[in-house]
Length: 234
Image (cartoon, rainbow, N blue to C red; front, side, top):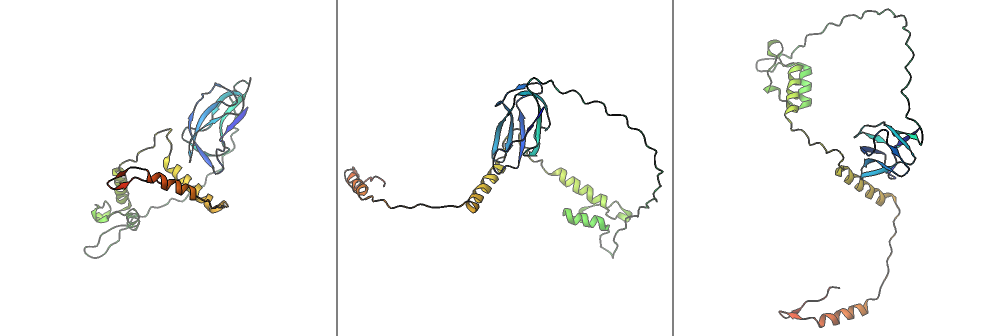
């Protein structure tokens, strides 16, 4: 029995996303067969198996992103039978229960609202902090606490309603390539190559006198339009 692991498909690859299995449990596979599609930052790549055997089971769900070297599936060697179900675990012998010491009851404190003079809003400190964090205008909220004070539940309901009102983000189709991640990877690779890889530049001088003379003669023989001829570009 062997483990089929996430291969390294590039020097800078750290993880990959399983996009599709091209085989199913029970299929016979041979060395070099394409059995899965993995998406990296550079695109979707077909991966092959390096041993003969029977594809037994997948260990990773479609869409999961796992590091390089993570087992993706179990492949039995050629001629091997599928592995049997694991033996039943031995019964667990109950151990004497230790006496449970009852905990002291916690008395919930009544949320108190900040009070002030006339015209000042009544709101509990926890509700005020959550409203500031979520950027919720408490002046538009109706309090359900004592004397109409705004409590934490009021702010939580307002935050939940605002999230529900947002349009859902478009999900990426299954099996498609994440172009944004690909562009990021390409930009990072180009920047790293310029920064870390030694560069050298070559320069030479070429005599083009004869080529320029031929170009001048060729342009002199070309037809003219409106007093001008259409020259060949150098």
